Structures are given as structure tokens and as C-alpha cells.
Amino acid sequence: EIVMTQSPATLSVSPGERATLSCRASRTVSSNLAWYQQKPGQAPRLLIFGASTRATGLPARFSGSGSGTEFTLTISNVQSEDFAVYYCQQYNDWPQLTFGGGTRVEIK
Amino acid sequence: EVQLVESGGGLVKPGGSLRLSCAASGFTFSSYSLYWVRQAPGKGLEWVSSISSSSGHISYADSVKGRFTISRDNAKNTLYLQMNSLRAEDTARYYCTRYDYSSGWSYWGQGTQVTVSS
Image (cartoon, rainbow over all chains, first blue to last red; front, side):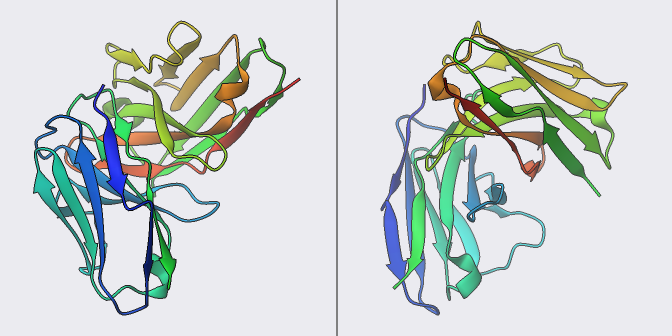
């Protein structure tokens, strides 16, 4: 099983700042990596697919990068609605999926 | 509009059974693979099971293999998860989600809560 490790567990940022979230795979997943946002009481929302492709309608302040085992989700100019938990997910072992433990982005 | 609506959750004793359903609308149900993903209270996301469009390919997480059975009825536009021999650690919110090879898991239901407790 591919293990996904996210860091940091919690990220404190001020509105308008940049947030950088990391995700590491225990072995290569090529570009088969997705990012999700989840707010309390809501289902996960797909943000990024294929490591860097934004989901339909996603603001351009969200960007994904990386390949192999190291990935980054960047939120430039963090807005109030961006405070949430973010998960990475590998699907290189499709149909078996594994998720990272999540990064909580909180208001500083 | 794509909609996925889960139902069938509830409180069940250890060793008991539940059958979850996920009713789909707004798309050609028989063309898509579907997944169950769960989330224990205060925890992260865990893939549970997946089924291809024609039910030809089915997979399970090791944690549920032999106890859970995924199925679908393409005539009724409904996905199922039969859960037997339930354990306390199966307590979670269960989501169904649709997979599209070009855009991933863009659509999720709101989930149904399963609580396993005596």
C-alpha cells in the first residue's frame, strides 16, 4: 500500500498570505495525485486532479505541482473561505486509493 | 445536475448488518465507476470499495474485505454497500463518489452516518 504523508498537520496563515501544503508518497505515484478541500459537515471537494489540473470553476489562487513522490498545493492570497482541511490522494494504485492524513489551514 | 444521495445508515450493534444505498441522478449512471469512501469521527478519509461501470471490476480495502459487498443496479441508478459483521471501527460517515477518468472524483454525496455500538 502506498502511504501518503501530509505536512504540516496544521498551518496557521493570515488572510492574504500564501499557504503551502506538502504531500509525500512512500513510492512514486507519477502524476496520479488529487487534492481535496473539506469544511466541517461537508463532503470533500475536489480541487486538483493529475497533480496540477484545477477542477472546473476552481479559483486560480489554488495551484498544484509535483510528480513522483513530492507534491505541493499552494493557495496564494488565502481567503476566509479557504480555511478548511486539505487532503491529498493517490490513485496510481487504482482502483485502490489512499489519502493523506490532512492539513488543517487555520486563521492566524 | 449530478446528484448522489446516500441512505441506509444508522445505529447497529457489533456483529450486525446494514445496507447502504446511493441513489444517483443527472448523469448516465451505467457509464461510470463508483466508489465508497468513509470518514471516522474526527479522522481522515479512507477508501472502502469500488465498482466499475458494468460491475466487472470490484475492489475492497483490506479492512473490509470479506465483510462488505459492493454492488450496483444500473436499471435503478443505485449503488449499494452491504455491510456485515460490523465492528466499532466501522463507525464512520460513508460517502459515495463518482469517478471520471478525465476529471477524477468530482461528485460526492453528503454521506450517511453508520454507528456501531452496543
